[in-house]
Image (tube, rainbow, N blue to C red; front, side, top):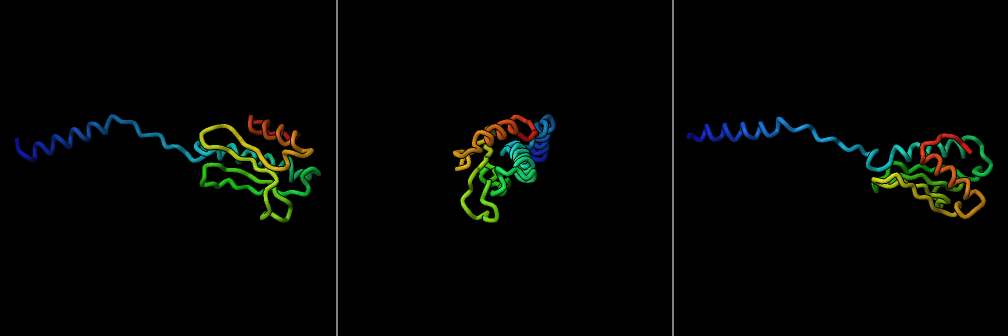
Length: 130
């Protein structure tokens, strides 16, 4: 057998192996990081807590941090007109899980139960305000 014939057979075997394979699915960043879920939660918090003029949140503003390279998109509730200060509430998604973590001093105050109820409702797919 000539070298050309062997090379042709190797090439045919290689191409035949590739022909039967389905393309690999591409994982999206949204599916991997919980970005879709955190976008929905951020929009709901903005609509229900801030844009509505809710007096319980009048002293605060929303600081979204959805473009997280850590795989943990989140939003912060910070003192109004002082976004550089320490967050009073952090709502954070996690890679590969539907879990949402919340922490910060606002979860110790009078709005804590409401914040938890709202986050739980929005995490489950609800869109209503309290």
